Length: 114
Image (tube, rainbow, N blue to C red; front, side):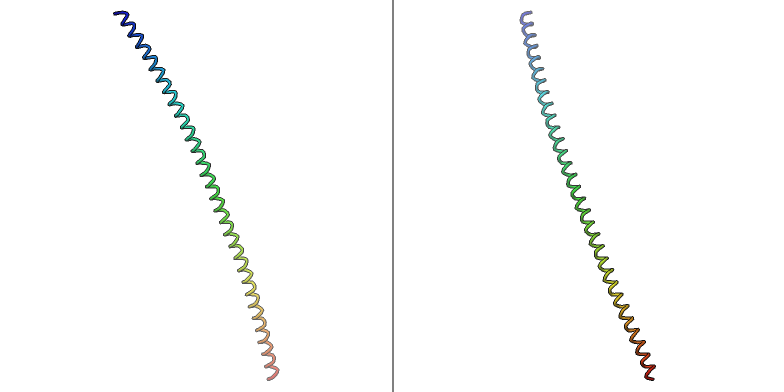
């Protein structure tokens, strides 16, 4: 009976040792797979964030470029309008002066005639 008991105890110990080793190997494999997955996800996240930042930078640059273009076009339009306004006002002043001189000449002529 003792021999059978010792033999069963030995089998039990071997089984427990084998199960412990299998459990340890499975845990090691799972840990390695988990670490690899976390590293892969972190790399993908880093790439995605970098792409988003690049897109945001490009969008900001495009926005700033567009604003700069609009401002420059507006400045050009205002300059052109100012020049046109000066030209029109100058012509009106010349026409007014010409009309004034003709009226004065007409009045002098009429005084001379009468």
